[in-house]
Length: 216
Image 1: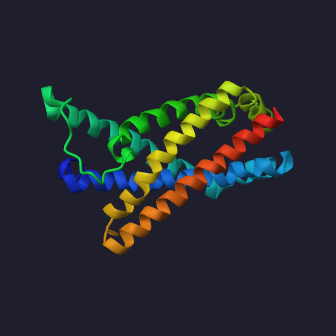
Image 2: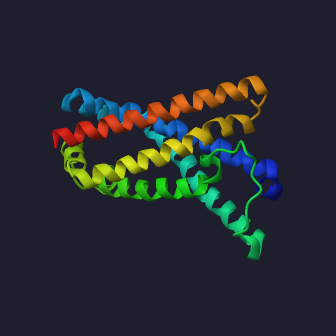
């Protein structure tokens, strides 16, 4: 079991599988939030659907994989820093084809994590957490324009979406490469799909945020 967590293949596999959980979580989250674009009634309907037994079980599982991804990425980064010792600031041996995102995945991850915490305190804590504690939750149709109506919050979210875009453009194809789809033909295809996926996620969340800002 220890070899799974410490071997080179095991590390990549864990990061890839948990990364796929993250990508699925983002898709589910975006599809649900997209209902906001069609008005309060549509959004309220989606909120009710999200409370169905299947979704109630699925979302925590995907979110759990997301959390493991964050914790394990932090563990690996600290482990690598310890292994490098006093040479941790030396120039890294990276190839000319390595993208900027691939060289800064942890930094991008920290930005995403920081804004995720901000997002949870402004939405999840005022809705699902209150409901779990038996307290009347805030109405999501009131929360959206309340939060995004602040131009500075909107700008912060745009920075978050940009960091997420860069993180996903590398993480998406890298995850599928690690799980075995790594021949030259499919690797190039996954690279293209990764940019399409990341861009759809970016513009999807951005459209929702801007719509809430306008309504606010």
